[in-house]
Image: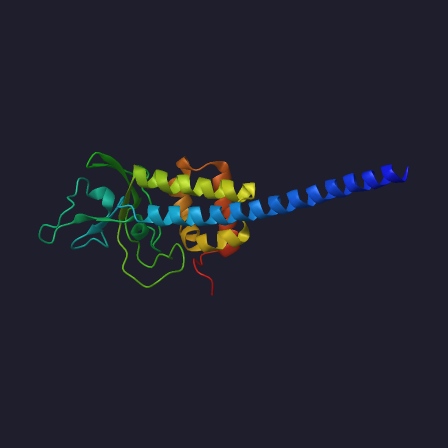
Length: 215
């Protein structure tokens, strides 16, 4: 009987040790997955922000003009007339309110469909979120630009709601999420965002408000 007890004790000890080892590996693997997810999402949004899929209205009177009143503008400056300056996505995510017209389509530029996201600069209008003091201009975004932004938002909300992105991993994404989470931006991108994504962005507004950086 004593021998069986010894054997049983060894078996129970081995099982307990295996469970503990498996738990340690599972915990370590989860932490690695969470860290990798945060790094990948940060690298993705930096790359997306660098895409040249936006345009700013430039030229004399550009800050008082309505983009919808000036279709087919060139991408090169000619005298003092209005023209469209190609810019990276990060530029059109500046602090000024987005105000798309009822028909936001601006047509095509080099075969890419483009959309009005800021039709005009409204005097004394509140900023969409807090940022630096700078000049703002009416703006366009391409379909590719919209899709890239919305797809990234979906990846972030799936990771966060699924537990592979923690609050700690979410923090470095704050400067990129806060500009996208404001109601004027959600309204412009709504057609491409899932219900879960819109709820996630509402949570970002509740968490950080209009402050894209921590105090």
